[in-house]
Length: 383
Image (cartoon, rainbow, N blue to C red; front, side):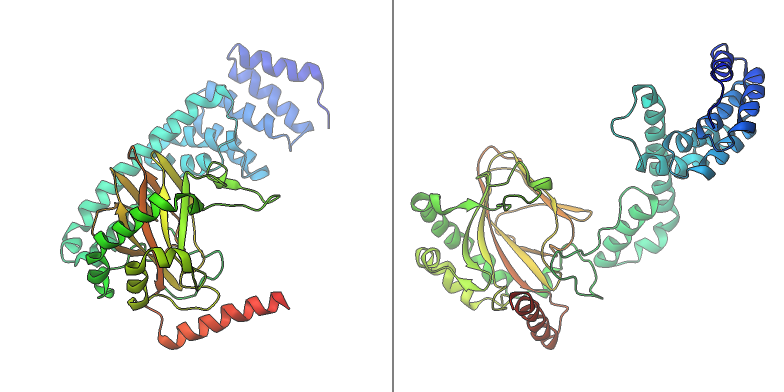
């Protein structure tokens, strides 16, 4: 129903002169004609706040949210009223919910309220995390390193400081495997052999860089007509380039010929062996001050191993909620089906070797069955 312009004008004038009582009377008259008008509900809440009637304002905002539960202004206003009535802790979750649906672009008139929402959320979250840490400290002190790290991450998620990062393989997410960002190195007794070969591998890599640099191709090459999403900056760019020694289970003859010691080492290591899929082994080169944006890999049935070869300065890597810095002579294994990203913060090229291995929590029978499963899917779509 279209309300009379004169009535709407009278409401605005009453609000403009901060006459809450008159505004409420006029708004109630308008609501009698248009009970489903959300803007009128918001105006009534404003008028009631002018009168100091916070409980009435809250009821008006709840009525607006009944009509449209994801109305940003109504939710943000409700949080502000609850904060005034009951304090920031009671408003914390409402502010958090409002910030999840923050409009883009944000009207400049709402910026102060959004700034307050962020302040309340941050300060309350910090206070909650500290309170949880204090109350759980005796039990936490009895945990070993693995359990303690798991508990600490769980506490931060519970407090609202961060979120849970599940396994989300873009090809296959194998069920009932824990989402472990970095696996304990004790699960890989062959790591010392790989790490001891760092100097040899780096020497062969440097020879390749000197004579085969052009063979390092952009790692990201999104097909034309496909959305590039987060890869816009790196798509077909040598900012992130790679040279494959193995690719989708096929040995790349020329790079392996130029890196005979590395190739022989790879033949001895327990890589994932899946014809058509694995192993894949690459030299991954990231230019100075370049970031690889958050993404997930193909499957949690396999892990990736990183061995740093050229580290000219600081370089960081995040998997889920855990961020580490590469260190020469140290390898790690991680689940790349968990959201991850990388930064080369140095002033020169960073190169690591990446190779894929089976998730050690899979049995031999499962590995064989997963390989059959993946090959069967390919056969189905190629028929």
